[in-house]
Amino acid sequence: MNKILKRTLLPSLMAASLAGVTLVPAKPAAADDQVLRDAGIGAVTNVVTGAVRGNGSVLGNAVKGGVTGAAVNGANGLRNTRNRRHRNIGQDVGVGAGASAVTGVVTGDSRDTLGNAVDGAAVGAAIHLLTNGK
Image (cartoon, rainbow, N blue to C red):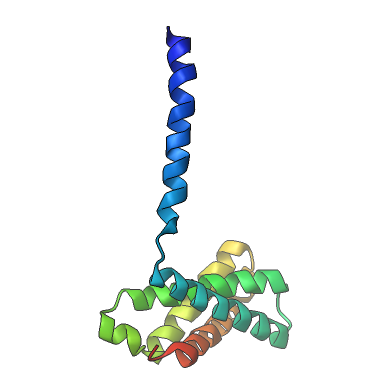
């Protein structure tokens, strides 16, 4: 009896959960677009600053920049609606520097923490300049 229940119940349960998982992300969310935009800006900016400084690989710099951009977006997401549209340059640069320094340590690029912080500050400034008021 136990095998019969497993053979009957499990496939239908898996099908129902798979349908639920695929239908949930179908709702569009504007916040996701903003996170992806800031992560993209961060990745490109960090690749450029890494190339200028001659530090790290393109992929490693893109990952650090993407994480930094998402962190800057997250820090601004905690603010109220008016302040989200009018970002604070000090906050963006500070969060970018801190997030990039921490990401560098986590990814194993801890030999140049100050350089990672400078790259992150550039990411925060670029995001601020390109998205302030939008």
